[in-house]
Length: 392
Ligand SMILES: *Cc1c(COP(=O)(O)O)cnc(C)c1O
Image 1 (cartoon, helix red, strand yellow):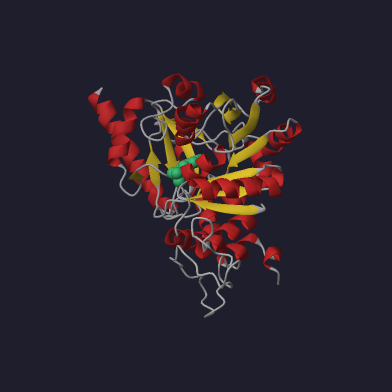
Image 2 (cartoon, rainbow, N blue to C red):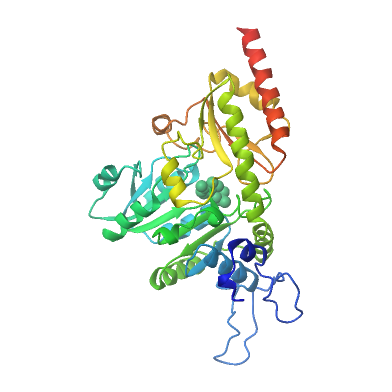
């Protein structure tokens, strides 16, 4: 059977499995070589120097391209390295349109680094087609979206934005970290470039830092290949192997992350210490219908607001099973306080305009048993409430 015809669960489980020609090893080996012997002048095995191309990384890159329905894949040393490589497409005088509620590191990269190269950006609600059109300038080169956004879980209609971008000759770039190709494939919906922090769900175990780029079309693929090699923020062979190992179980993990997140979000929605839960799997979420249309499942991350900011400190102190930590997408449950952690680099006015305030917590629900997670959170919320009511 052609690999392409297999369902995604099978393709994930089989990443790198049938490609080692010498021993038949079930897993593709780690090739640490940085240099490759040439048979003779003018000949190459296809590998010359490992920044350009490396065997273990290549298996990962081909798998990533196939999973995202793209033409070429590129593995980078982190999600930020992947974004920086893509952003090197732009230069002096170029303008970008970017999702308003954005990963803090991406915002920092655009505002603090790209600005040095004369690239400017406008932040808009990419669901509002009028706002999108109004932000377009003669020098606009690309639109960059995250959906769902992190941390507020806002949904953008990928197909609508990409077809608008195409119509105006803009490159569309989608950060697909929160849903992964298991649940959402932006290139099938018209995107030109997909970017991942593979550190999150793709790696899945909070133990490998990596980024991926997948491109559609020959010209863009060649250009990103040139930038990937020229900049050199590439993923090493051991990390490439570790990432593939994580990706093999992506389907199982995403299904459990989704069902656990649903259970946790329902629990928190009813809890008296919680005022709001932002989760696109709920029919009353404004992005529910678009999310249903463009994705086959829901992410394991959501955010919520406690009714009083004073709850945050004791809550984070009392959780035990759930770790108070930065990051998301791993098998272990983590809770993050975006206002002081991931989003600290975003100016207060912008943060508060989108709702990342001091009552907001982000929850990356792991694959532990939902009952244990609920018990941990319930105990921590009640302990926090006792401290606050007691101290009032
Ligand atoms: C974590 C993250 C990034 C950055 O990736 P790193 O692997 O940490 O460099 C970019 N985008 C999103 C949505 C993320 O969650």
